[in-house]
Image (tube, rainbow, N blue to C red; front, side, top):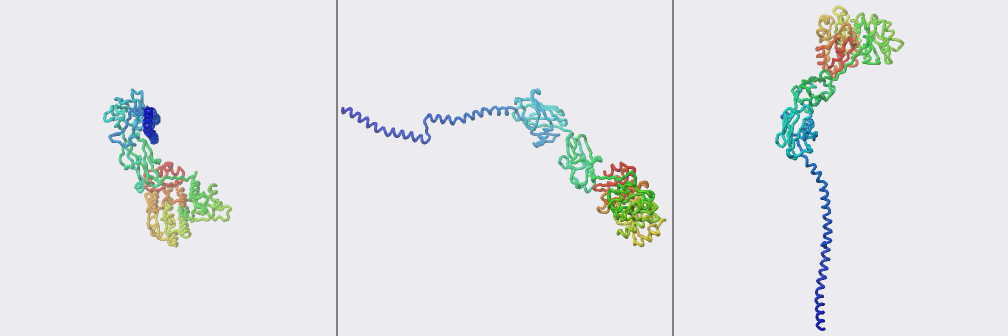
Amino acid sequence: MKKFSKIVLSFLLAFSFLLPSVALAEETKKDDAAVGVTDNKNTEKKTEKTKEPEKNEEKKEATEAPKETLESKFPVVKVKKIILNEKDITDKQEIERIVKELKLQWSINDGTTKSTVEGPEFKVFKANTNNQKVDFVIGDKYYEFVGVSVNGDPGTGVEGKKEFSFNIIKKENDVVLRIHRDTLNLKVKVDGPKIQLKKLKVKLNGNQIELGKDIAIFAGSENKLEFTGFDDNFVVYKDGKAIKLPYEFTMAKNSDWEFELKPSRSVNRLSGTDRFLTALDTAREVNEKPETVIVANGRDGSADALAAGPLAKALNAPILLVEKDSIKKEVLDYIHNDNLKRVVIVGGKGSVSSKIFNELKGNNSTLKVDRIAGANRYETSQKIVKELIEKHKYNKEVILVDGRQNADALSAAPYAVLKKSPILLVSPNTGTVQAKKMLKDLEVKTSVVIGGDSSVSDSTINALGVKNSLRIKGTNRYITSQEVCKKLQGEKDYINSLIIANGTDKYSIDALTASSLLNKVNAPILLVDGKSYTDSLKKFVDDLKLSPFNAYLVGGESAISAEINNNIGY
């Protein structure tokens, strides 16, 4: 019994020593769990959770893999350089432009697969890299094949043709393409006023060019010529016609073009069915409702009004024509406007009768009707001289013209207006004594002569008791009128227009009424024969360099031809 008790006691003692170890082991397990150490089951679960994204990524890679494989499967062709007409082109934008112009098409497998080249880098679909042959065709008619290389290896093709080929052995293939395009020569010349040409700039497709020198341009190319720098009132002409700017053209042949800078052109024809209505049309151009009008005979007595041009300017009055005993209804209606205050008849009763005087007066008791007249054309001009100097402050200098013919007096009117010097008709044998007295009374001591020695001689000038300061003359009436124009051109800022009238005796009456326009424009009266626009006339008009070009043609087509109307100023 004692022996059994000892055994039990020993067992209990041993067990008591083991309990702290067991407790320590349990605590250790708890501590390990607190810092993230798990058992196998938990570890397996966590491992499964961390592997799930990897499975998703595998799925994603599985779906994307075919796409990447598809894109990388076909080889790429890159046009790295183009040699055009032996000139290297490496600029990417320029290469792209040319590639598009070429209209290239490629094909493989004898044309079963083909496509259009849209740019300098493209994929050759359904091709392989195992020495795959690719055929090309140039679609543009102006370009020709010269040579090609891919990755440094030459391709094949016939120079001057449209077709070529090369073989592909890599996924990325660098191509150098040699091509040719015919060029044509363009030479550009520009004529015009020197002051405008100095400012002019001409550009071809954005690049400034040197005028008068050949420029190589690709055949069939579309181009733009720009003209800039010149004054706004000028226009560029080609082949006699104004062109639209910029000037666009397709180069089809060698060209030597001449352009011309000209002022803007305005040509107005003033005319009626006869001389009376032509004068009326001219008057309306100046003023629809004038306060004063000048009336003269439009037939035999037209010479009475030869000196009336400066008077028309001084009175701001148009010149109208009547018959001795009749007046057209249209003319009378125009005269009797609401603003009319005064009518001045130039010529005696033998030119404009008392009957017409009364018709002009009408029932208007406030209308003033005056008559300036002498025994002949010479005395009438003397009275106009007196009127202008005494009442309109004209200079004490006279313009002397031959009263035996009409032309020089008509050309003289604009010069007389500019200088504020009245026109005096003279003749070697008529009215010289009376004219001398009149000039002396008015204290006129100097003169200007319009016409040659045969028109107004030195002896006639001396007989008048004046000193002549200038003679303007030409070989005939037309050249004399041109010389007057040149003289006026020399006056700064005077000429802004040109009046053109027929200078023959048959139509010179139109030139008389053209003086009405001096109330509107500063212009010479250029006398022409009315038939054709001759080279000499064109040169004279061009040399005037009116800017802008503004002309009035006084008279119908029987007086001034359509040829002159259509060509003057161009």
